[in-house]
Length: 449
Image (cartoon, rainbow, N blue to C red):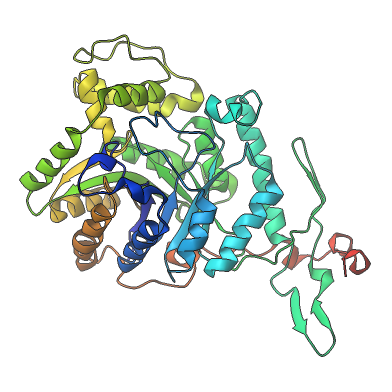
């Protein structure tokens, strides 16, 4: 029987933009490793597939009004690996402001440290603020994705550069490795020239799990070629079904089956013992919204300055965004038109999930909506985005997960020890395991002693 997949999206002290102000949180936790360890352990207690950290290489938004003080994700996940055994560990890393060798090595290291639980959320970094931090002009959308495609080619070659049985550890003969099974990749392309091999052996998963979140046309093609899980944002069941069908329909051209890619929409649940209690809790958070911060965030989502407009008036007609930001632009403007929202109301709608679906209800109501999307071709699972941490995840794990388990929609025990096994995805073979051309092997004489 097909089972749900659930990921916990970690964001400081919560996904609601005012979470840091609410008495259920402590803003000091944003840099406290014990806070994140507790979250990861709660996710593991609930048998969730993975935890995920978003990231960018610039300061997000206005730090005057939000706790935008973030730890570097690979560093943080390495610390979480030490206090967990099963839950997957997914970090966001950009292909625009890194080099393939660095990224391949870091994720291979995390995969070894965690015993095969690493995942990479691939981003191309669309903001100008990130480009400023590297002293360059932001590459355009097409160029970022062209670089990203070649970046992935190089990284996968590097992960494959050590065959699984390359390490001998033969103390009797003095041979640590079979150098005919350690390969130079000799990649030379438009963006990269990399000799290889990687200086760490093949990851336990073969290759760490690949995740992607872009919803532009180029982003969806990139996901269809490379991604094994996709984080996405849709507001309605019809929109979810359309995205799911579209993305799954692109896989065949890349020789892939539909079950080789999981679609995980975001969901931000306020949970109460009654629906009224859940809505009161949501209202408490909404009352703490800072309008100036909300306007800045909305302006960023739309790619247009909203400050000149009346907060209690409608969203003005605006020209569409560039392709790179068009999917979120369309989502936000469609939401405003469909529900006839003022700018102030739209800010409130977006405060909990930045365009992801926000639910307020009982555990049964939350489980019902998850089941509806799962059984009607809109999702393979969900990227759970608690409005506040750690209590929001505790409520989901302790009250919603048992309902999903009782309905036989979600696991009661982990299927395996690696993230791939728990996602139901195959471990890829090294490209060098089938054919072992001698000219690709490392010359033993060239290996430093």
